[in-house]
Image 1 (spheres, rainbow, N blue to C red):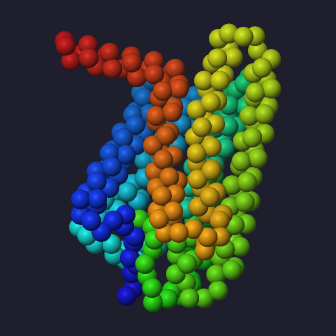
Image 2 (tube, rainbow, N blue to C red):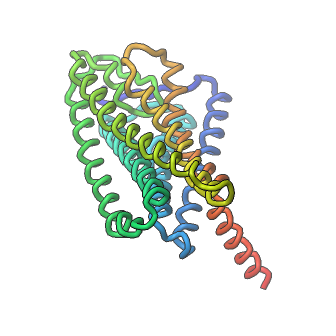
Amino acid sequence: MSGFLLGGFSDVWELRVLQVLSFSLMYWITLVGNLLIVAVTTIDQSLHTPMYFFLRNLSVLDACYISVTVPNSCISSLLGSSTISKAGCTAQVFLVVFFVYVELLFLTAMAHDRYVAICRPLIYPVIMSSQVCLHMTLASLLSGLMYAGVHTGHTFRLPFGPSRDIHQFFCDIPSLLKLSCSDTFSNEVVVVASGLGIGGGCFIFIIRSYVHIFSTVFKFPRGTDRKKAFSMCVPHILVVSVFLGSGFYVYLRPTAVSAATQDLVFSVFYSMVPPLFNPIIYSLRNEQIKRVITKITKRMFYSGNL
């Protein structure tokens, strides 16, 4: 067999239908929420700032990220077919690695933006100009293509054994390494080294930025300024914590440690929860976005009545 067999959550039809319904609900909430943020930050001129520029990019990325895995899983569960071609599996691995890498860089850029806005406000327009933001985005996308290409090629150069059962609902590198019939030590070293180097470096940079931010914020007098600073930073910290925590667990643990059920649970957590959290956290915690959404809703309701 040239393809692979993706793992399912259950062989019982009723449970598969329940899984499809829950996945579909999370998928559409994620898609609508992220596209709403894209629309709001594009339509309203007051949100044309570096902070919302990166938030808009992150929302587009999350909508694409969850679309790589969830629709295919739902269709496979409904049809009772878990087969995926080698080309399809390669595409999934490439896109998942690409989106994870770029999302991490976007979250790091957002932390830097918050640091400059709060700690160095006088030179903020110079450091975070529109040209700089565009260059940061292009650099993230181009380096993400190279990073994903290297890891995908390094994974699929391996010979795979007769067992093609992937204990995930999509193809990812840790699951594929378990199927190889050759020594995967060099692949594991590359995954761990790059994960610690890039993920750890971004994590240290984000922590360093927020140490400076909070040390500056606590010097503010109690009141509106401090509350506004926290309202901008807390959502970002929550998103970063969920994303990095789940991603580090999945990619940096030894490939032979966890059971199949545990793999499935954590794959759901790192591939679906962060994109779902992004619109929920930023919509509920960000007063400016809530105000703009309310204004647009009232405008649409008023126009409908007319």
